[in-house]
Length: 88
Figure 1 (tube, one colour):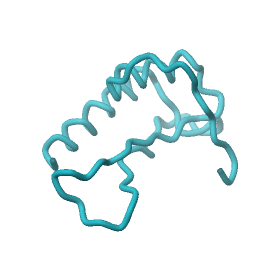
Figure 2 (figure 1 turned 90 degrees about the horizontal axis):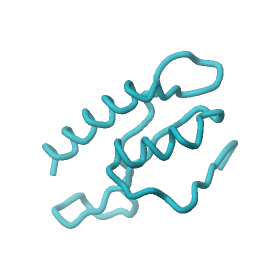
Figure 3 (figure 1 turned 90 degrees about the vertical axis):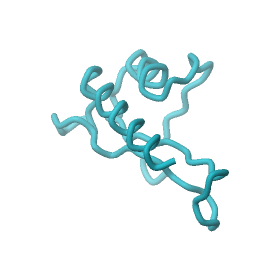
Figure 4 (figure 1 turned 120 degrees about the vertical axis):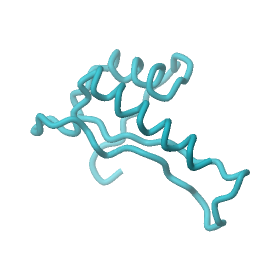
């Protein structure tokens, strides 16, 4: 599992650079706040499902987000995008 996670993180880094995804509206740096979250208290094993996350600038274009989901995370085109802001 560790090798696959490392490969996926490198792939996501490439897509972030390609799409020029920023971490905030006031910062010109590319986002570096992304990775995996494990819900629950169990130890990580072969059956553990990890969820991916990324922090995006509030003004990130919806088309860029969809392209990231499709290219970066290799997901199908979403029917709905929900934005969580503030103390979400």
